[in-house]
Image (cartoon, rainbow, N blue to C red; front, side, top):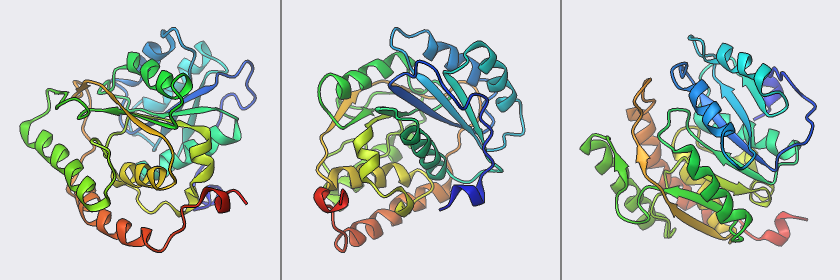
Length: 266
């Protein structure tokens, strides 16, 4: 994947002053009802975070709202506009590359729809920055099932998908599809982002699996996940199929890969 051939990138502020050590990546598509509120809520936290919104050519006012907010939060809010819906995984990979190029130490994944409580960002940050973990996962299932307002069928699908992933991969993570995450920089520097296979929600599984195989320290931080109130869910049957059938392929491919940190850093 060569971003220069696929994406159009428009940065409002390319040179930053007093850069925070943490970047939150928020992929968006048709999130005009949520994006302003989530950005304002993050910037109201005690901990300083920068935000990168990656918008996949939303047909609504999502990108325009972000651009207006950039005037209020210069040097801390940024937007990357892409030509269309190119997949969640590719959005995060572009965000990871930006974070690494701009020397962020802690890189977060987060949804725009308030299913993840902005206040929990500080818990994930503490788990990495203060407690020495390399990957902190905001986990719905670390202490039971902590999901609010999801249809029962969706809860069961998500919960048993995580059990399936644990059985197939041997990875001791209870919420393998979680999308609320903090990576320490060295994890993303180690993983070859160009070779990540999945573009949908299975991307979340692949990134955790690869992090685990490299031997990085992972912790699950219990959170309460609340189903979106505004906007549309992006879940589809294709996403589910990728997660179910792709996990077995990922496990088989792992038999032929080296996860040696020393050789990776040569």
